[in-house]
Length: 86
Image (tube, rainbow, N blue to C red; front, top):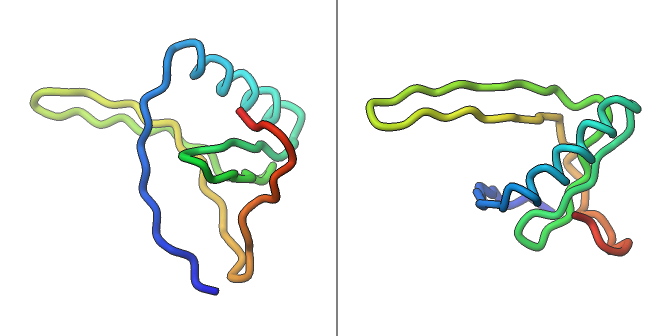
């Protein structure tokens, strides 16, 4: 089954971002996979994902983007529902 393209951006509260970044940092430090739910879809980020930080400067705004990338297997499926993921 082909994967559908997806590009979603969501605004989170400071408290939510802190919690997500703390969990991500703990996973990176322990060399463990990270699970997150975004717009109703559960995503498993493998422990060996490539991490980058981007900086964009425009005429009227500036942006810093923290990015994780990893290859996907053609037959990969969404994560099963295993309880709450923040």
